[in-house]
Amino acid sequence: MSIILAQQLSEKTKNFSIDETLRFLAAEFQNEIVFSTSFGQEDQVITALIATDDLPITIFTLDTGRLFQETYDVFHKTLKKYKKEIKVYFPESVAVEELLNKKGPNSFYESIENRKECCFIRKVAPLTKALSGNKIWITGLRAEQSENRNDLDFFEYDAHFKIIKFNPLLKWTLEEVQHYIDHHNVPQNVLHKQGFISIGCAPCTRAIAAGEDIRAGRWWWESSHKECGLHEAKKE
Image 1 (cartoon, helix red, strand yellow):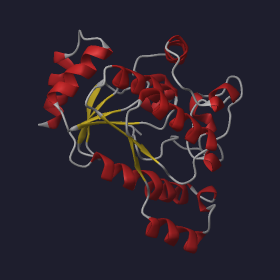
Image 2 (image 1 turned 45 degrees about the horizontal axis):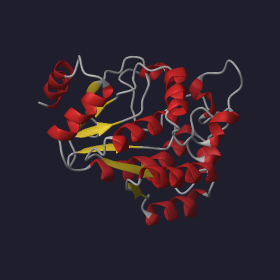
Image 3 (image 1 turned 45 degrees about the vertical axis):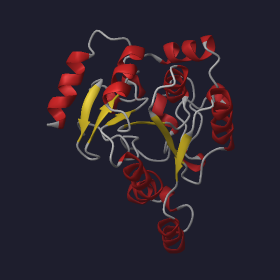
Image 4 (image 1 turned 90 degrees about the horizontal axis):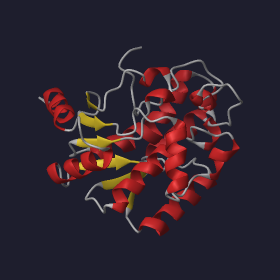
């Protein structure tokens, strides 16, 4: 049924602008629609669109406990500018304590399995809680962010979280995102100007060099699909 609903939403909104689609979804799924932000460039664009129209869409973020101070800075600036609540979800303290007691604070560097375990505790489990009871999940995913995201659709059913995902900026380029931010004076993480294109936890993110893939700065010490489990690829 949810797959069919995703297809129906795609058909209904195929001639809508992003603003029109967001307004339509907010009206159709009041109290059952959420947007997850990590305060990256794409997420800041969507926050601006939601806040400008004062849409009844819940905005939330995941505080893993290991974010950059610069991420908290843009979080604070965003609250000040738009005066819209951003709900914060934390990992379960017991799970974090057990992980550090058993494997130490840097176990994620030792293997992909350990890194995914850390991502699950700090990101996936809190996200599951945040998405519970909702029908629409808005994301800032773009197709050019990684090879894994090339085959995404604007509306798709996420079988893992059992929710319909809407990716409004899917076809936008990074240049288009930056143009919107500059034109509308949207708060931006200062790390973006220092070569940090994709920003996650501080120990797991570095700046990228010219010519490197956009996601190369995430978990740079490993060869993987560069995903943490929040957005699983359709194909491996």
